Length: 311
Image (tube, rainbow, N blue to C red; front, side, top):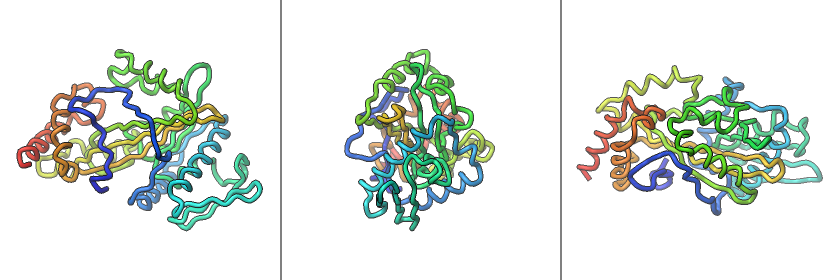
């Protein structure tokens, strides 16, 4: 993707885990980029080959799934009217994806009017992964999701878990009380008041599908980073995560749009290069280990240092 549209994730030259959410203003829950066709083709292929890995839902989520489908269609047609349109006749909705030349007619809330679950249907039209958490008994649970481009986690394993159970493996997350602060923030979210945050990592390769189940296909790449290939092989990976409270189900929708930029492109921005160099130099080992970058972090630092000296 072009550098001027890459979502740079940092503010300052020190990084620690935090609730870095900010209010989402004048934007929809999804975004269409120049790689739309390529990524939708990949998503659909993954859903075909690995349906249980890429889509999970519990039976009580259907109402919320319909609510998500209506919200996503509303935003697609509002922000990209040349690409997506909606025609409503009596109870029937006809949704058109003009990029893919596809038309689907269904009745919202009628589970038999689609050939698949609503969340699975609408997820096949957007680049984002879609995660649905439901609130009950004073807690939040991951009850449904379509996840094709995970950053080293498993939807099948995490479905049904609470927020704190999901984030328990993150080093320091519980001990520093960050899990409770973020949980409190999420529970206080209100409908009509969306938020957005950016999460980052480094990827040895340009693969979007880095699920736990496919680790044997991409994990070894971390050992193959060299001085000669680091600029092209290593990518800065950023997830733009948008958070919405759903007024009908009172659940939370997380849309996750993953962006990749090779270091050789990323470092064309001098300010980013300087700041990221300091971040990696100072980054605590437990964060580097959890993000899976320890094996090649030093090669990246050397590369960034060389770019700084040449600028």
